[in-house]
Amino acid sequence: MDFALTLEQRQFDDSLRDFLKDRLPMERLRMLADTANGFDESLWNGMIELGLPGLLVPERFGGAGLGVLDAAVAAEALGYAAAPLAFTGSMAMAPLAFTLCASQAQQDEWLPQIAGGEVRFAVAYTGLAGQTGAATVTLEGGTLSGRIEGVMDASAATHYLVFGRDGMASVVSADDPGVSTTLRRSIDRTRPLMDVSFNGAVAERLDAANDPLAAARTVLDAGRVVLAGDTLGAAQTMLDRAVAFAKERVQFGRVIGSFQGVKYMLADCVTALEPCRGMVWYAAYAQDALPDEARLTACHAKAHVSDVARDVARMTTEAHGGMGFTDLLGLHIWFKRIGFNRQILGTPERCREEAAQLQGWTLHV
Image (tube, rainbow, N blue to C red):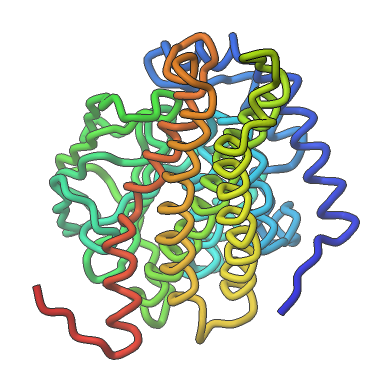
């Protein structure tokens, strides 16, 4: 199936990229990476003005009523700019979770707040997403207890959306006295992780889903596709910068882009990366319109794009020579973002294992 962005999608993509180019110069990115939580209030407010928090919120709640495909396109632009923004959890996974799991009254309460950017959600899983740290919580009598390590988008969250092992979702305020957090510096310093402990924190259960486990996995699949889009954008930045450098850097009286070794290396990057765009878009479209393919395509997109982007990041860094490894060029910001996205919400190995199981394969280690 061939995909092409609509005029409205292209216009929104252009507006988002122009905004990020203006608001996130290299100096700003470096400063945010050195802060405690990587959160920028002015950037968040700018996203609200663009309507990004309401992208997946239904129109009747004040959102744009768009789908995961639109979120993946936005994620690619955010990854291209290495934007320190809680997009995956708060603007993509959380609206979908409330749409699938919340009662009408809960949707009336929370979705307009998400669309307006009044709340920021960190989404945490206990066992479904393949995390390696502690991830055990219990929900009893309206309170949540336990600990989840390495929670994404949690450094500036106002609320946590926690999925239990049975798929049951619950909402906890970050200000609850039963919640304590510890900052964990991740490889991507623009998006640090948090270790979150719950000690009898008041929790609001979202129990309207007929199949909570299926709903939790649907939200997870959407998050994986959005991360794949973000990874694609980050890899594209590194490739674009390497091509520009190869056209300017002169050695032995010639620009290095005229050397076969450099040309072939960059051509390999283009050849590997370009098909990933169609793969991500199809996986995102499947989340919206092809439920039978949604999980499988999400797993494949997350795994494949992660591997391709890792190779592109390595080769494009090497194309800069020794300068590519210095802080001066800042390539490491995107290099580390690719590494972060590769691990969060399931490594390529985890995603491929799930894909194999979906297709009836039994893996023996």
